[in-house]
Amino acid sequence: MSALPPAAMRMPAIFVGHGSPMNALDDNDYTRFLHSWGQSLPRPRAILVVSAHWMTSAAIAFGAQPASRTIHDFGGFPPALYALSYPAPGAPALAQTAADLIRSYPAELRSDWGLDHGAWTVLRHMYPAADIPVWQVSLVDGLDGAAHYQFGRELAALREQGVLILGSGNIVHNLRALDFGTPDAAHASRAWAADFDAAVAAALTKRDDAALCEYQHLNGAALAVPTPEHFLPLLVVLGAAAASEAASTVFQQFQLGTLGMRSVQFG
Image 1 (cartoon, rainbow, N blue to C red):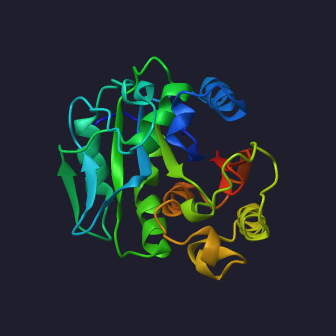
Image 2 (image 1 turned 90 degrees about the horizontal axis):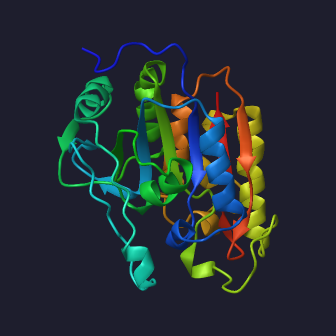
């Protein structure tokens, strides 16, 4: 049985480029955009986050704790960052509802996670009151883009119940190729980052979902996506979007030269 009655309005599905954990503290074009984006969206009844920073193996996992701890899953940052918390309520009943929707892979409930920085550093700007129930769903190690796209298709029904499906990662993410000291800019500092971001943007515009699921073949992919975890949340969100829904780029920027912050809304 659904944990929520049907909502009057289908919620969007969104992908957010989250970038450095320091965005949680910084006042910049990106964080000001997040604040305005949260205000412009219909208020969700709950939020399901698929973050680059939670990956499981034997099953796709859903966080089912009644209250979510704030996970500081990073090192070497200023003490002020570790002092931040995002005490949003959890959504254990909805976690069960979501797990029941998965048919393509084993699903399980977990109470040992919380909100990692892919979730809370974004949400504290979009929904600073931390008063909306939030839970996370994991990525699955070893499964390809098409499998994660299928997870999105299976979870899409949650949108009809007032749930905002939020993917958090980065379309271009190569920590070995950051250009520290480079100011935030509309254009990447390296051609391969610009090429891959442009190829993804073109595929999104055409809703060429198959090409995005096979992102490894896009121009610049080898350097732009050396590991898949920051790209896969986009594919879950893409799967949750109806074929008739256009992909709207709502923010586009590069931080540290090559870190792609493109953010996308469906619906």
